[in-house]
Image (cartoon, rainbow, N blue to C red; front, side, top):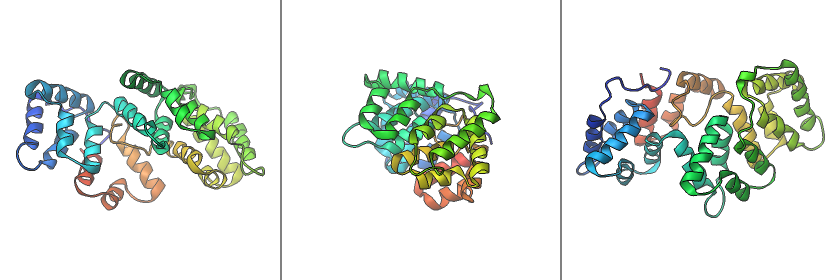
Length: 292
């Protein structure tokens, strides 16, 4: 199972009817909703939403939200929303009102590609008549503000440029000198490497760091940094293993995600979901993970 592929027998009218049936009368048929979601790709779900509105004069997302709740509702909404639209909405939620949800900013901005970030910025501007860069800057401070601003600029080198082993060694030494190799930590020097280099180049740099310091770079991040900046650095490290929010990112290989998760946490992704989640939310996630 590499991803959720388009349904070869796709019938948006029939699927719309089944969604409507799942919400008809007392109670909701959550099992049918789950099956419909995992049986169709995101593009097909968008067609179903359009067909649903045509057939019933109702917004399918709003109808589902009125019937569902909690984590299950949030997951269903994620699955019926175009991925980058969902990202833009989550980012807006993270910066609006009192306080800032920096975890959401970190999760999205650090793990998306340059093209995806540019798409998110355009959608954000269209949806909210505001610039994402401005909102992130006004709601954050310090080194995390600089790091997220860099990510918003979508300036990371992409993998097509290949790996420079010499550069990896040089920058591994720079990171060592900026952290463990001195009293105090030079966050700016570390952020420059973490934010600009491609994922494949960072893998080489992290391997070189392990050879220099005889320890995993994430252990150093945990001891040398703190707060949101530490969370951001660790998110970059995790993204190298393709561990992330997979509800609306079926374009990546879920087999790789499962393999990486098990290597990282010595537990299968399915077992984690089984023990950590509950109810319809758990059933939905397991249906995604185990989908054939």
